[in-house]
Image (cartoon, rainbow, N blue to C red; front, top):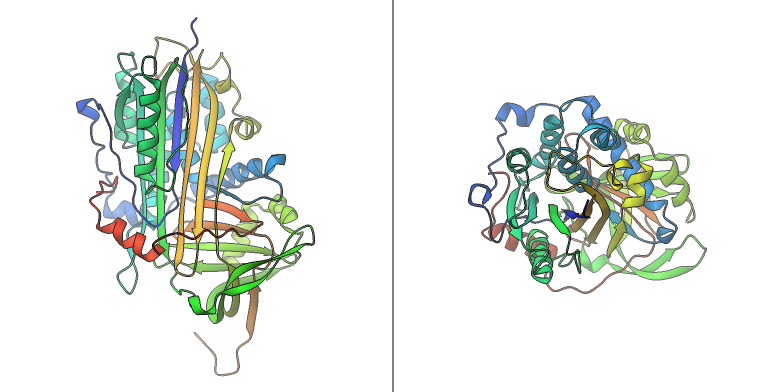
Length: 452
């Protein structure tokens, strides 16, 4: 049977901004995604402990497999487990038999896949559109789309499922006769849904490509307590190999943050103006990050969440901005997704015209952290071939992130991980416009959200 390529793209954007769904040459019945039907009761309902722990374990295992790559050692890294999970969930619902079982097992969810998709949306819903004291929003918006070969026979039931369950929009291209235009449209969709932070995810497609599934997440938020730019100054940053460099270090004295310390590392929880926070895990030693990453478990995070307390802390933290691109096929295979990558894969829920299998998976992500807040983005692509203070003097703790550290951006309600990464070498690039300005401009723009 002839080889066919299906491209599966997930876009994960960590910016304090919105994501939109726009399409070219859409089929009319799928032109706009439906509004997410979430009742007030559902919004306030606590997620089950099983769902929370399962997604957290997937997130940590996903990250652990990324850092296992020799090419990432002692390098900055940013990824979005949430976006990867959403992309794999869409893929799962097109799979049958053992192909679907392996994907489900890797995602670590049990039972109804519809409930899992709704859970992923609830994580984003809980964090987004939260207003701070000055009217500043934390914006976390997502988008799904599926790009298909024109005049190719895909099951209407699968297209309808993506539209209804994942709020996805369909647009058609001609991979066979006009691959350059197809690439342009896909990259344009990526740029629109990441506030131009990720403008390119693919440079070419095979003439046998038949389908691209895309997910986008865009995050932009301000710190609840911003750093004073006048206190930022060049200071020493210690590296794992014993060397040092000078970097722009932000400073804040006697600030109230969630603080926890144990043997081997300290933890600091820095809230955003909305319903999310950044959890920073700082090893005691400059060469201690690798050990901390390998030992980090869901149980460790639960212990931190249970024992962290509000304390006065003197904080030093570098400004940083970087991006990271990862080939996800090897990590996903180590997580147990194997059949999907060979010609025995069963994606018969998508089409009967040709036999499809996954040939390549990519994720590209970026993050920017400064005195005002955080902006981040990520893209994942999957290609498929056929085949209160006491009166006494309080203790003030120190949290000086002057050495490699781990960070997690989490939604507050369930502490689910939206983004996760590490800083080995702070890299700061000058950029026009502050995070606050970009956030407000994005909120004012006419953008169609999944959450209406």
